[in-house]
Image (cartoon, rainbow, N blue to C red; front, side, top):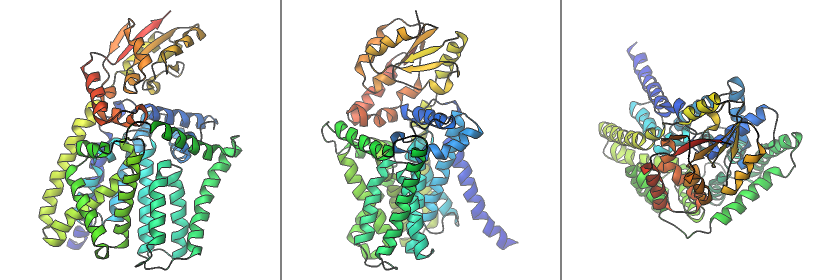
Length: 497
């Protein structure tokens, strides 16, 4: 009986850790506004698929995202239900990272604490609270690293590993096109660093990976063809994204952006420890397993490439978990292996967890409050037929299904007003200011019937994510948020004649 209790205790601790993360990820979520334009666009695409419209199936080159969430939408067509599913996925993704990359995860009390240490990271919490490609991408990325670990440890047969690696890698790429960067480095590192591998490589191994990888991509392209899309729609979307990225790279190189972000939002102590651990791995590779060498090199090379591309925190989405794992490994080396002080590790981990929760409390939750429901209620009461919004789409999930939302991207788009004869309203949404669509600011000078505060638009993290498009820099993004917070209102509504 005593032995059973000892075996049960770590499981209960692990479950309690998961429940705690579920609470952290879902706190105030159901009353929050959509994080950004992409979150609403993804929701609209899922709605279109539910109606049999596949026109945007390859939007943002992320068909797996829509296919994943479509069944949940069919069960309960609600934006916040999908957000809750995404939050649960984030909790599970964090577990996969810890369980697959740290030995005996959640089998010992301090491994459950390690789970919390990774799961309460700012990137893990913030991306789990928006309907975007990042959390699902983290999930597939964790699965991929797990398959690589299984292959290296020979826990799966040689050919089974090849097929599974190819399938998971393709699903990852079809979720987040930016995965092409770490996937390329992982493939090159495995191919040209064969020394020390437990299993010899052959063309047959890579051929099976390529067949399964290309097969899944071909399957999604076939679905598009059956739905009436051109066969080249997916590759054309990728080319379009790359071309747009080249245009937005016109601003001066800023090598400090990610350093500033990591210091401001992530756990700087673990980031410094990760650099220390990475340095040790690169200097003394023979002291580490192949898996950790792959992790260190992939994190470093991906980071360097992202420095050359348009900046946004999500650019490091596949680097964040690797940095945290490297940092945690260095911390464990000091306190569990070198000094053999599990109690010290528990204390240090708990302190770091509280530090991360403090970051979340200050940089996530305050921006969960929204006034969009009030505006939607007014529009419904006024029996509005259409509402014109200045770029922002945050109102969309709150709108009555009979009210149409039209987006104004420039001030000249106000010519759309004349196309509608029924009751129509103009919603000045400061999202246009954050995106630096300057012509829309002229509409701010109009006299409005209602004015509202909107905390979600004052979020510095939102401004940072838009740096990729508005070609500004880290401090400028913070200034935009600070200036917006000083204003008495961020949303305004008026009835149009």
